[in-house]
Each structure stands twice: as C-alpha cells, then as structure tokens.
Image (cartoon, rainbow, N blue to C red; front, side, top):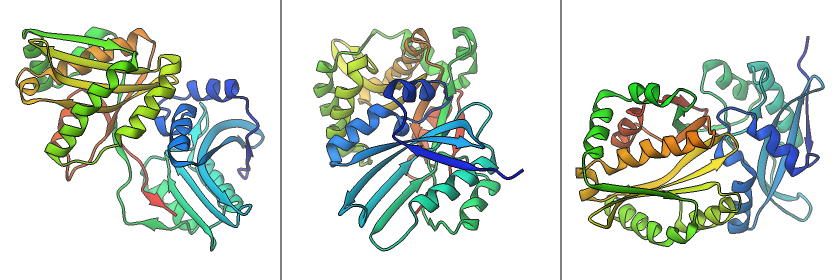
Length: 317
C-alpha cells in the first residue's frame, strides 16, 4: 500500500495545536508555538502551522517560519526540527511522504530560499530520503543533543548519573550554596549580564540576549520559563534558564564563575532543576546542543547526567 501524505496549513486552533504538541514525546522547542511568537517578533517573519495526515489519519504537525514578498515571488521558508509525529507515525515511509509533499508545495526555485533542519534521526535510511528527493544537503553537521527521560523516580535518576557527575553533585550539596528557582523574569537582566560576560570570556556562540528576553517574555505568560541561581556568600556563582514547552523542557543558557565551578554549582542547579521539572510533570528534558569539536567538555558534562545522545539529520535547502 502506498503512503499518501496531505499537509493542511493553518486549520488547527491554538488549543488543538498545543494539545497535539503536548502529546508528542521529545517535542522540539523550535517547533513550539511560543518560540515562533518570539522569533517572528524579533525577525519580522510569520509562522505557518501544518496539520499532517498520512493515509487520511491525523499523523503529526509541523511549524515553519517564513517571509513572503509580492505574493510568494520572493519567499523564504525555514523548517527547524520538524515535523513532529504522533504515536504510531514517523516511519521512514511517513517521513519520505511528508518531505515529498513539502517539496511539491514549496519547491526550490529562483526567488525562494529554503532552510530545512529536519527533526529526523540521522540514519542511512533517512539520509537516503533526501537524496532520492534531490533535496540538497549542505556540508554542515546535523543537530546533536542529549535528551534526559524524567519519568523514573528521583532515586533512579540519581543512580543514572555518571559516577564523576554524581560525586560532584555530592560535593556541591556539602558546600554553603543556596539555590533558588523562579518563573519571575525580573531576575533575567542580571542573568543575561553574566551570560554575556561568560560568552566573551570563553569565546563561544550562543543565542542573543535579545532573543532570550523575547522568549522569556512570551513563555512567562504561562509560567513556562524557569530561572535558577546558585549563590555563595550571597554572590551569584551560577545561573541557568530553561524553557518549558508541552511535556518537554529545554536547557537554553547557563553560566558558572570560577567560584561556582570550584563548588560544582552547576551540577546542583541542574539536579534541582530536574526535580522542579518532575514536579511539573515534564517528561523529557533537552539538555541543549552539543558537538565533538569546539565544546567537547560541555558535551561530556551533559552526558554525565545520564541522558541519551541523539543525532539528527543535517542542513538541507
């Protein structure tokens, strides 16, 4: 039996979209409605929301961010970390049918710029789909992250920590650290100052403070931003910002001072953040992008939390 795919655009109510989104495990932050609101405000773009049907059944959703000029004569379309599949869907045949349909609806042509970063696992079978459909791959690595399953109980999560990571957590719990978590974004400006200092000192890329502020303003409307701070002698020595989306959450930014590193403040913050998220019935925690070249140390730290390293397909146009 052939696989038929249909994408209906902008037909779901916000409530229906969010209900489907919340039922999908490991739903990417970049496919969330609130992320689109923030990015579209910052970049003067607009979002489109697709309802995916496979052989007539509701199979998933996809969000794109676009700019159109003179109708669609000049058109930019960005698909980041989608589509998202409902339970029972998302096979290789379904993925192939989806991108075949999308390719027909928005084919590559003069005047149209496409960026496709699929939320599709990097496997030989999935890679072949894009070659067969002649969707060009750019020589850039795919997104890599670590997903942490928060369904186990507290004791199991602690036992799943790697030995060195757990030892550092034990160390931090013995220090005179005080931690706090809030959904109040009035704390954010000072956190972002520390973030900008840390980026400059360590020379790494990260989302702009302007984007983080906009995202926090949107996500905070439903108390879906979590700001954590660790203090030593009444000085902030580590901080993290987490965004909650559906039944998932994403560790967005974080920084630690030398004093914070000495007392493993970041370990304590992330461990307590896991407990905060469990209390909110969050099931999947995205620990954020990792790579093996410029940020191997960060990757090793995140791997120590006992999650699953996940590789997605690369950059297509």
